[in-house]
Length: 323
Image 1 (spheres, one colour):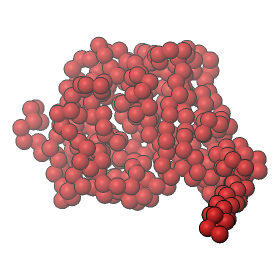
Image 2 (cartoon, one colour):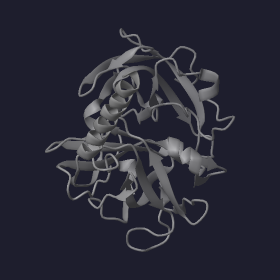
Image 3 (spheres, one colour):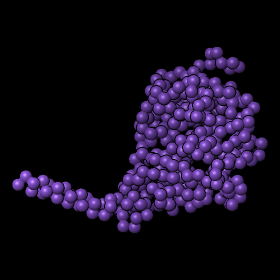
Image 4 (cartoon, helix red, strand yellow):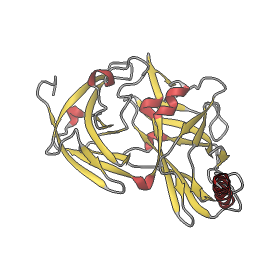
């Protein structure tokens, strides 16, 4: 009798597993955005940028050739498309396309770029443009193409719903400057230079530096996850990092009126820091970390999804040369 009970229990578990498989497809969810039999929702893809550490760069063009979701081509994007990423700062973004896809939860997103040719078929495909009008190619190792692998959180398409994935292509982390020459960082580091999130699950920090003036021109504000800022490591490009402030989630240049926007931040707590690059003739600048004061604890700034956090700051100018 005991043996019969065990067999019956095993059969029950097996039947339940088969039933679940039938509900999700014979071998589980397909996770195929192009599944013709699945209910549909709308997926949009957008891109934004953070500034570059080079005051003599007026534009930075990157050519995108394909977007893939779990290995399947996202045909809502029609590539190749060459984008001036430096025009997409402080919360500005560019829609790369949208389409109806199979409802479900996805895990992988690949953004494919090419340094060979631009959208018109002209070389190079990726380049910076200097303030003097000259163009400088941004080379990629290997065959001149790279797949940037991303894993957005909350990447779920609901039936009859709309989801927008925002990709932040952080040029400051993606491009290294050496002897006034620009190049992409290694392919592994390039994956860390781009982040992707469900836009609806992000918020932003809008701030104003009240005593901002021309002497602080070029200042950049950085947002770090709370507790992750290490001054010595972050202001010096050392170890495996070829860029300063490598762990910043995002950054923003301060405008002439003292305003800045740290956009598309995942919900959570952040700490805020500010730096003023000074030109040293090689385009990357000597970094000066500025002291900030506020009625808000700048080591614990909360961001909520779909909301805006406002900050009023002043810069402590004591001890800074020529200010």
